[in-house]
Length: 396
Image (cartoon, rainbow, N blue to C red; front, side, top):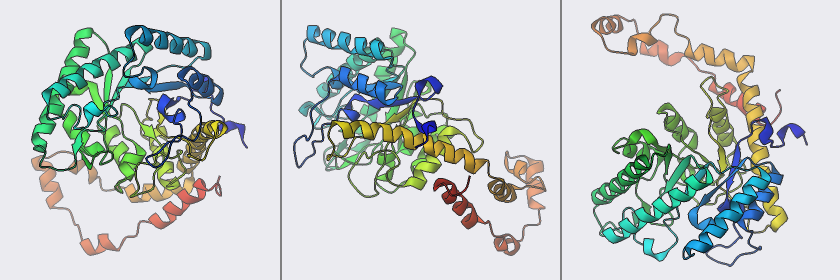
C-alpha cells in the first residue's frame, strides 16, 4: 500500500475523532457491548499512533454526569496530560443534551422551562470545559429536540425556545470574552420521531434569525443528510457558499437506514469522492480549512485491534479520495467538457448578475431559440465516467 496515504499531522493532515467514536464499545439497542471500554487517555494514545491530529468530545465522554467537582478536575488533568504527552489537540467540544432522562422531552425545546434552563446551564459547563481544553468550536446536536406527536407542542414555540437558548449562550460567551464559533448540527429523525430543524438548510435559515448569527454556522454530517436520501455534497456546498461551514462530520450511511455511522467512504463512494473534492477545493473554489472530523465507529464485530483498523481506514480513504479528486480536476478532458458547458462567448452571464434597465433591455433583445438550446448535449455521461475512472484508479 502506498505510504502517501498514511495520515501525518506534520504534513498538514488535520484528522480528528471523537472520544465517543473510537470509544464506542459495540453496544446497540439489541445487545450489550462487544469489546472493552477504552479510557480517554488510552484513546488519545491510540489516535496519536494512528496518525490523528486531534480529538473531540462531549462533556460526559470525559466527565460522568454525576461526577463531583474533585473527580471532574482529576479526569480533566489526566486527559490534558495525555494530550501533552502525545501531541494531540482538542479543536471541538460539545455537550451531551440527549442521554439523561431529563432530556426525554427535549433540551432547548423542552416544554418545561426548568428543563430548558438546566440544559442551558449544562451547555455552559460544557463550553467551559471546551475552553479549558483549547477548543475553538462548540457543536450543538439537538438529539432530543423533537417530538413523536405534534400534539405535544406547536413547533413555532419549540423554535422560539431553541432561539432563546442559543441567543442566551451566544450572549454569555461574548460576555466571557471568548472567541468561539457555534456549529449547529441537523438530523431528520432518531432518536426522536421527528427532530426540529431537520436538515442543514433548515439550520442555515434558523441561524439567520439569531441575535449573534455571525458566530454561528453549521456542522453537516454525511449520515444525517443521507438518511432521508438528501445530498451531503449539496448541503456542504450551500454551507460553504454561505460561509457557514464551521465544522463537518464525516462517516458513511446507507439511504433509508437508521443512523449507521459507518467508516468514511465505505458506502456511496462516489458521493464521498465529490464531497472530498469540494472540501479540498480541487475544483477551483477555496478549500475548507477546518478539521476533517470522523463521527463514526467500528463495526460491532470488531475487537480493539479492529477499532484502530477502522480509524486508520477513515483517514486513508479520505487521503486516497483527495488524490483522486486532484487527478480528476487536472484531467484535460474534464477541463474541455466543463469549459464547453460553461462557455459564454456572448457575455450573457453578467447581464443576469444584477437588475438594471440596460441589462433588462439587453436580455429582452437576445435571440434565444429554445429548440436550438434544447438540442445541445452536455456530455455529462462522459464526464461522470471520467470521474468514475479516476475514482477507481483506472485513469491517472
